[in-house]
Image 1: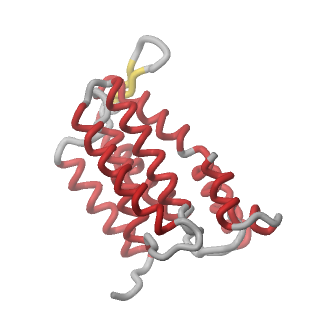
Image 2: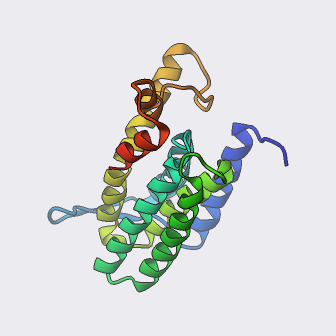
Length: 204
């Protein structure tokens, strides 16, 4: 009904993450996906889990600066989660990831430039929280690092774009969550690409 400040949103995100953590969805053990050995996080489990559950939704929200961008990334991430769940023999993860991916593909038809409907902060945060939470359930506790790495690789462009945005705004003394027109998609449009072409290039 009315805009909420970044601090209020962050408090809500922390609350949602704590609810999920209390239900047993957490990062407790990080094993080496390329060999033997594992790291038991102990009390670090709580802050690491909260960081993951809060960072991913905010990354998705920060890249939601152009029609279809966050929706498309969300759809690809859901397909990635479905593949991870399949190889981890987690049929419930495959099911929810495919359902969400299908919903986003249907939404993308109307969200593709020029968009008729929009995600808004609520939609972007929902996609991000879904991806962050389901990725924690897509593998056993001992091999969870592999799933996290897959999601981080799939989020390569959004993570880099977000990192550059934070650095750029910090150098200029601007609030981190204040929007600007210097993201990757903005620069592609400045180079002469249409919104649809820029979106397709980023997704590819």
